[in-house]
Every structure is written in structure tokens, then in C-alpha cells.
Length: 127
Image (cartoon, rainbow, N blue to C red; front, side):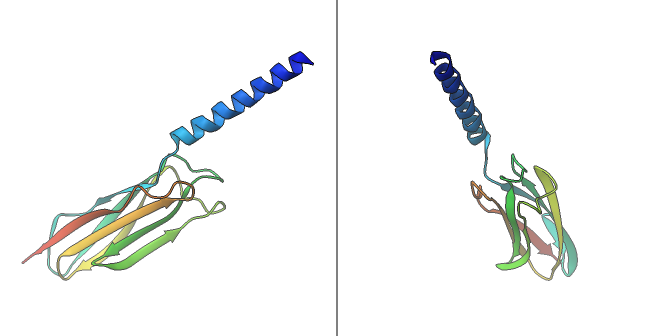
């Protein structure tokens, strides 16, 4: 009986350690934005948003990503347990016409831990 208790306690300890290590290594979804800092007016600008999240499993994944330009949502991607992102690090690309200066904002969120917060980037239009 005593060895059963020791075995059960050891199993609980191992399980708790595994769960804690998963929680400790978990992170919030974060983004970076890559675009030219300066463009000519009325030109098409390619904006690349790279999303980073330390997990991509059925239970834990980036759930959403959005890109806004000058306060208006340009694009949004939704993910689910059955439609997960392609990896722990992935990129999305959008194109926008730069009729004037662009204020770009992007953010991503984890289904368990949320977002690391929005990131902004400015594109100046020169004549």
C-alpha cells in the first residue's frame, strides 16, 4: 500500500511539473511590422506582419491577427483548434495604396494568454 502512495505522489509530482513547465514557457502572441518607411504618393505599399507565438497545438495557438491602416481595419485572420496558423512563427502580407501618410497598427492574440499588445509603424509619403 505504501509503494502505491509513493507511486501516486510521484505521478502527481511529474504531472504538476509538466503542466507548470508548459505554463511557464507559454507566451502571448506578438507581432512585428515590416514596410518601407517612405514611399512616393499613390504607390502600393506591401506590409508584412510577422506573428510569433511559442505554441501551435490543438489546445494553444494564435487565435486572431488584425492589421489596421489609419484607424480602419484592413485585414483580420481568425484561427481555431481545427484551423490553426501554419506555425509558431508565420507572416501575413497585405497591400495598401499610399495616397497619404500611413499609420499601420497590427496585433495578434493567443487563445489562452492574449496579446503582447499592438505594434505601430508609420509610412511617410513624399512627393
